[in-house]
Image (cartoon, rainbow, N blue to C red; front, top):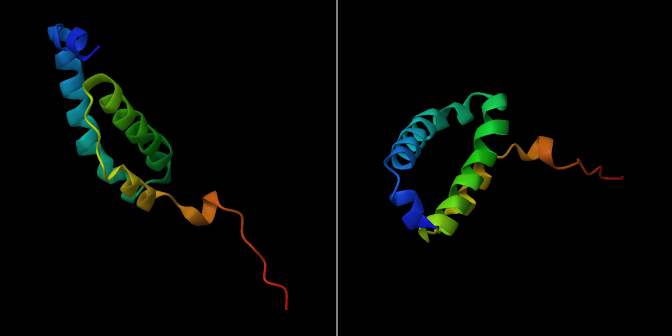
Length: 81
């Protein structure tokens, strides 16, 4: 499937520009909660797409978990005294 994408100059140009804009925009995750809701899932889809289309696996993909707001994602546990 990667060869089909590589055979299309328009698809290659789109993927190149989209990847560049995505990478340059990713620091917004540090400052914007809205960016976290959009860019983190997009990063996961990006890495899955790389694995499927180009057979390139980013071994440190789990580092994306550092950007998750765990206080909001997990319910709080109350300690009974």
